[in-house]
Image 1 (tube, rainbow, N blue to C red):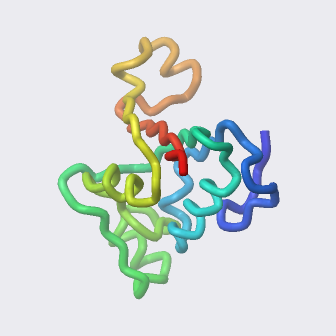
Image 2: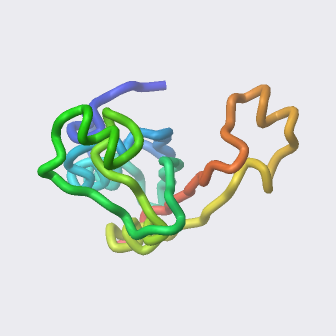
Length: 133
C-alpha cells in the first residue's frame, strides 16, 4: 500500500497494475492533473478503482471561485470538497481515456460484508481500465 500526492505520484510510468483512490477526487482542485498522473503510473490496460460522492440529479458542479470552507459547505455539502460530481461522471472520465465499469456494493455483496469492510451500501465504485494506445 502506498500513500502519495495524487497530483504528483512519485513512481515511474507504467508501475502499477491497480491504483485505488476512495473518496479522493472531490477534494482535488486539479482533477485533470490527478487523472493524468493515475494514467501515467498505470501499466497498459491497468485498472483504477475509485469512488466519490455522486448527486445523480445534476451535472458535475464546480466553481473555482468558491474557496472558503463555509462557501464550500454550502455549495458541495462538505467544507473540504471542491466539486460535486453529478450523473455525467461516466462520460467525464471516459474523456480522459478510460473504459468504465460501475458497481454498487449493495448489488454486488451481502450486507454482512458491506458492514464488515466499511463499504457505503449505495456507493458507486468505478473500475476504470486504461485504454491501450
